[in-house]
Image (cartoon, rainbow, N blue to C red; front, side, top):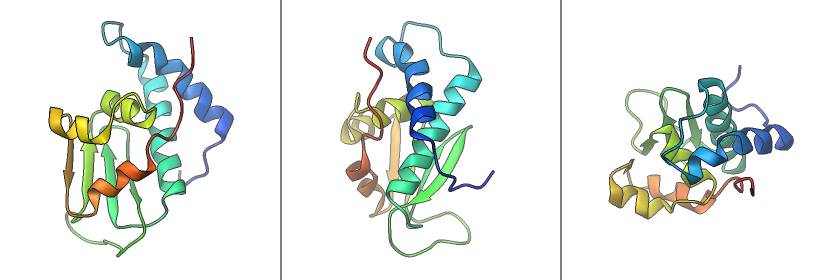
Length: 131
């Protein structure tokens, strides 16, 4: 599958809805791996489509890495601008339930390079499903 595939809005909403209870209550069991992967990949690929470019790499291991934000393309070695976080933190950011700066301050997100914080301008990506 190509890294910059188009994400169907209905599929994105369904994927986010499947993980929303867990995002709202960390005490709940994590969603099944497939549901988590769909939500992480869908939101990250939507970010890449909304903020096209190659100057920042967003990594959410083990599910996805995308390049986004207009600027110089990086092709070899470690990218100079990287945002990396875990799946739950990414989904909290993607749904607006957590602010980028708060995730950095908490140590759950690393943003290296001068362009990495620009990702915050493109968040949130999807609204959490209302219960």
